[in-house]
Image (tube, rainbow, N blue to C red; front, side, top):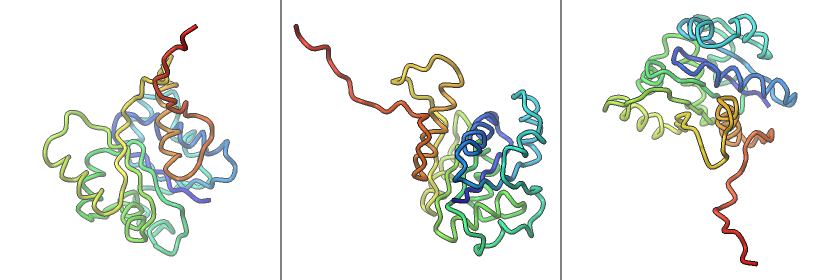
Amino acid sequence: MRLIVGISGSTGAIYGVRLLEVLREHSAVETHLVISKAAESIIAWETPYTVDGVRRLASTWYPVQDIGAELSSGSFPAAGMVIAPCSVKTLASIASGVCDNLLARAADVTLKERRRLVLLVREAPLHLVHIRNMASVTEMGAVVVPPVPAFYNHPQSVDDIVNHTVGRVLDLFGIDVGLVKRWEGMRQPSAP
C-alpha cells in the first residue's frame, strides 16, 4: 500500500511525524512525504525532530515546489493522502483548486482520482470561510478530521492523545496498528 503524507504549516506537526513513525513500523505501507515551507519551521519549533529526520521516516520525500513530481499525476497509484496537520491556507488551496505547490496538487489529484483524502484541519476558532472550505472539500470527497482529543480512553499523556488520533486516521484507510483503545460503551458495575 502507498500513502501520501503531507505536513503543512499549522501547529500540530507532531501528528504528521507520529503518522510517519507508525507507518514506518508497519512495513506494508510505503509513504511519500511532502512538507510545506511553513511546516519546516513548525517542525523545528514544536518538536525535537529535524526536518531531515522527519524526511528519513518516509519511504520517499519530495520538495514542496516540485510540481512535476510523480505525485502530481493521477497515474501515480496510491491508496490516498493524509495532510497532518492541515493549515487553513492548505485547506483553502484544496477547496479552491489552486495547486501552486506539490502538497496542494497531490491533494487535488487524490480527489480527482476519487481516492481518500484525510485533512487534519488545525484551527480554532473557525470563521465562515474556514467552515465553507471544509464543507467544499467534504463535498468533493475529502474527510475532515480535526485532531480533537478523545477522553473516554483516559489518556495519560500528550502522546496518548496524538496516538489515538493517528490510529483513528489510519482506521480510515483500513490500517489497524493497535493504537486505538476502542469504545466499549458505558458499562455499569454488576450487582452482587
